[in-house]
Length: 143
Image (cartoon, rainbow, N blue to C red; front, side, top):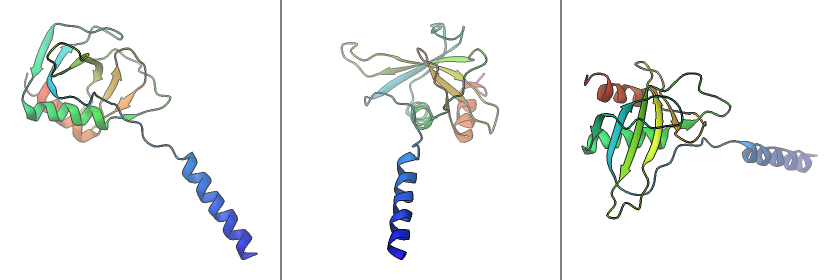
């Protein structure tokens, strides 16, 4: 009886491991980010190229990169409002061979999550409250 129980228990654990979902995060190219541009969004699907902020310093670039790479997909969640900001991630490029990553950003309130969506997509990703607070330092407190 013990061997049968052990086999069933091990099978159950294997099935649980196979069915667990790993948190999907956003991605960027494996290239050096040299600038992040931010504009007030004019709505889903497009990029407003009237830039209000341009970040080139390494500290700000690290904040954006970390926030984007650690933003976690929210399966089934849909956006219900227009984005506040459009974010354009620019890569170091000698011939313009790398595309600009375009994202929509809904900036959360202090200690809340913020939301990202790729420009040509509708999959929702949330940042951590810690990253929202860092964004707020860059985008709100600098006004």
